[in-house]
Image 1 (tube, rainbow, N blue to C red):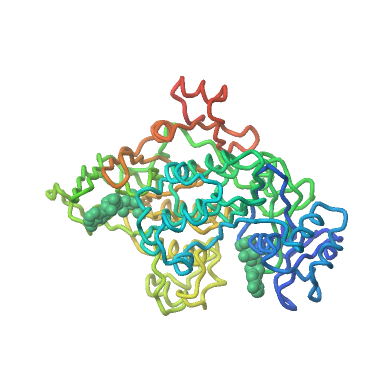
Image 2: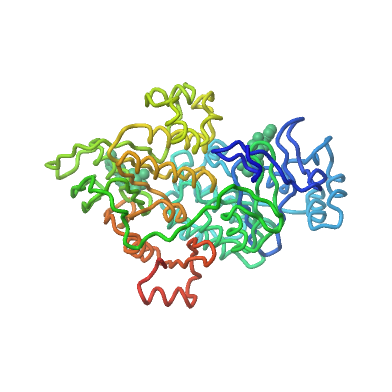
Length: 535
Ligand code: ADP
Ligand code: ADP
Ligand code: MG
């Protein structure tokens, strides 16, 4: 193993080194004798939106549970009571906070991480549920801005993931509370919806205090006033840093080195090399995509056509319910196009957005049914290591967490031999490190196989990292959709961001994309020049 970083890196077994000595005194909670330990807590600042950015499994949710009084921390040792906690935080902001928790003198409204269990807890309709919690009297505005009117009379258990997520966010924010805790707001939402949620939170009354965990960096950047980073060894221990400025915090996180803490959290930085504006990297033509049309009773979608080149990864952007799955399924020969004279002879490997987990098999055996490469050193370096699958081979598929299942599904998709790999939202449930590794894996496989990949994603950082070129879906969700491109990044991003009404600049240090403030000097200038995506 190497001695550089704290995280177990997928390539080398890395062990913990320079952890701060005073850390042991700052243990907040230990699960069982040799269980996970959380060190330090984030704290809020009144009237601000505070963010937490960090890998999965380092105690972010645990920290929220403790701060909300849901869980009594044991300070790393024997059980304690709230008086011990107050004593422990003597003289800090957290002392006052925990005094209020003890006296039940604080109201906290929570958006939980896992929304799938909400329908079980509430059997009514969306409208009834939201009317019951609307202490701020903002129901109409909220229904409009979070696009909930069409589901008002529906029961929770028939909602799509994205609809349920917005209902959960609405329920959390419509309460009158001293603190709003939100454990991830972007899962299942497309970019339009993410942006709407972000502006809705920003437009909360000035005195609102929000603490939010999020893996979509563009949204965190847009949304928060200050940022705690989390790092550690997932499943073993996690440390929460002091709050940082948002730009600085994100840059340090991507860089992998935290200067204030003097600690390296990752052996490599996550680099946003500026994509070449002209796109493709010189592969041979793989296929000429046909013009395809599909009409259902209430929905119509059309794909213009266009070329795909060997070795390239094409990002797909657009709202949900715009026809992405329908187009893919026509390409794969699973759905008959209206213009059925098209003759397609393509091998497509497809990872759907919602992954089914009802497989009673362990991960290793499952992957072995897909490829005879399983077990080879080639497969290990290409697929198993970068997706950190070794730790999962013996787990049953139906016991996996969302992020674990996602990594297995990506591996399964990439293990088949295909002309085109199509992955629908591979970043869902993954943290920033896992997203980055998933992208590297996809790109490498595609280059190696001289095939090509189409990747739908709603995380703009991921789109930026993965795309050689861009396909843009526009239209009206649920009614009609149109797929344009693939275009080079500049043209594609301009088209897409114009629809969204936002402009990006590049961070000077990391080159990462940053959303411009609406109506700022740069925003107006870039819109005037038609340069929405600054290259
Ligand atoms: P994050 O939100 O950063 O993904 P969590 O706070 O959910 O992390 O969990 C951190 C670690 O704490 C997990 O990896 C798990 O090992 C451990 N953990 C969480 N809840 C429990 C529990 N109730 N009992 C034992 N261990 C737990
Ligand atoms: P996306 O993948 O962009 O989210 P989809 O292709 O899944 O979008 O769906 C686009 C629209 O087509 C949705 O409104 C959906 O309800 C509709 N649709 C999809 N499949 C069918 C079908 N078999 N019959 C009727 N309508 C369908
Ligand atoms: Mg879909």
